[in-house]
Image (cartoon, rainbow, N blue to C red; front, side):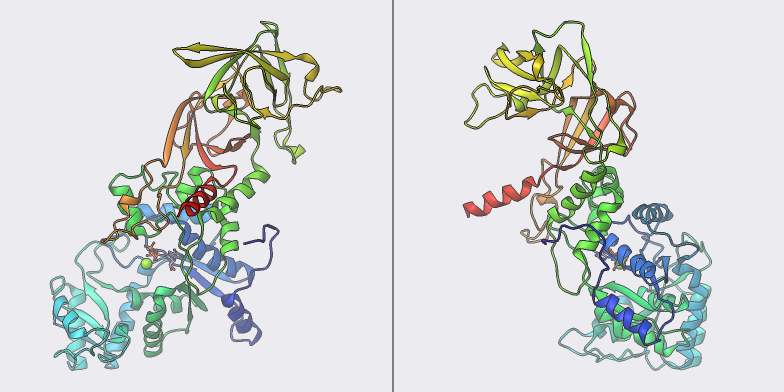
Length: 567
Ligand code: ATP
Ligand code: MG
């Protein structure tokens, strides 16, 4: 993608085109959409695509978007997810006003629709068990067979269905099925199950119901009850659309929403399915749903991604029907772009190496006052103290420098950012390890001074030892080391593809004192190093913990290039 311009452009895609036509033709006066998560897990970046589309379209066309929980399966769902989902959608910047609903709000109406189908001879109570139903269903190449119970009378069906509701039958003994066509090439139309008996308490309706409607029956009717005009969903529901339309046509539905499918988001080096995310959490491969390596919205937030970066990403990937497998750096670049604009700068040394400036007075401290942001003067300045002893990064010193090495090496000079030019005079060893450098500074090279002195090529960052705050830094990387986790395993086991180096913890980093006032979730650009965010869970004012959000540049692209060069 070459368009790096982040000024908002009006998104155009086939769905928005349909909506524009429907408004222009007068088919609809107001656009109504919905975002319908099942509360059986937390939201991930794939859901963000759907949220951005559904809420985005509603906003753009002055319509309305329902925040609807699709809570028809009490066995797998949990209210604890509801709060998390609401928080994540709000964080992304969307507001549903009063339009928060649950499919379970409609259980009574759905039941009446089911009776209506029975009355019309369009649904029947099935006595075959689950396995028999499967056998009778046929396959892609083989037509299904009618159930011996298919021709039950309306009266018998009604009586049975009412007794199902009253709890007279055991789980699995009866189901309600639509009567459509057992030889349809579309298996979804081979008398799909609409209701089943589940004698379990529901998180919202408690023990009021012991029969629960299935997704296909519930979804379209909930859409209709809410006056949804465009029901936007992912492509795996394409084959369900004939059933969606059949149900709406056969009952007295208040309106006929149009289902339109788009392709789901896939991201290389990640897994995006709740089932897999749950496995990662439950088996302890990550610390939780909000582990900063997880591409859940809570994980991205904790990692330091601003919501605007996630929105920008959704904008960039767009909406279409074509299969996609987006490069991770598209997402990472969005974070870089947004954070470059907003993140205050700071200096932090990840692997400290002590430097003593031998000609600097012992008890002297001076302060430099660089801008917090090079392009946003309104963000003000910060105070960076300088003294005789400082830390630089071990990586910024080489005893035996390769050609064109512009950082520090014996006898060579480098500029300390915002401060002076220093020269390395002596290297102190302990057990063959470099533990300290002795340097001298040149007073005439003070940064910002009129005669800044001679030019040196390298500029490195540093912090004053006596003023530094010690922090823990967690260097996060991609959770998977394979572009398509599970692809090369016969069983699709993606666990083997976890990146063993997805996190490196460094416990005694040294940062400039300004950072001691940082608040949870604040993100900084550590100059020359990357973007880092104060961990919202583990950081304490006296024991700061930073998560690396993203590196300054895409290091994986380089790795992949080297890799493909080898093959
Ligand atoms: P998963 O497959 O991750 O378990 P799901 O589709 O079962 O997700 P739901 O809670 O049913 O999860 O999803 C709510 C909405 O988000 C649905 O409309 C679904 O189509 C959409 N959605 C889920 N995953 C993606 C994705 N990867 N890309 C785009 N939309 C998605
Ligand atoms: Mg689903």
